[in-house]
Length: 42
Image 1: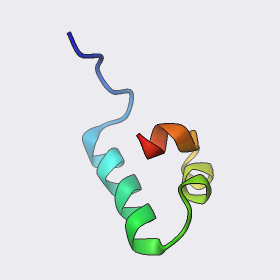
Image 2 (image 1 turned 135 degrees about the horizontal axis):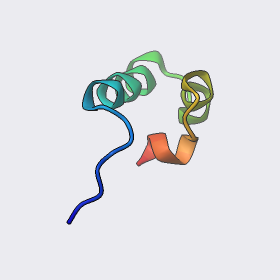
Image 3 (image 1 turned 45 degrees about the horizontal axis):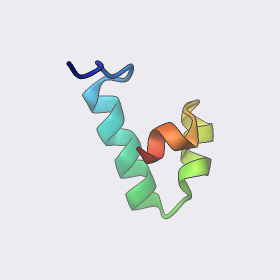
C-alpha cells in the first residue's frame, strides 16, 4: 500500500512548475515554500 502524500497534488504541480519555469534552483524554491529541497526534488 502506497503512502499518501503530505502535500496536495495541486501544490506539488505548482511547486514543480516554479522550479522548471523560473530557472531558480530546487533549494531556493523549497526554501521559499517551506519544503525540504530533497522532498521537492522527489
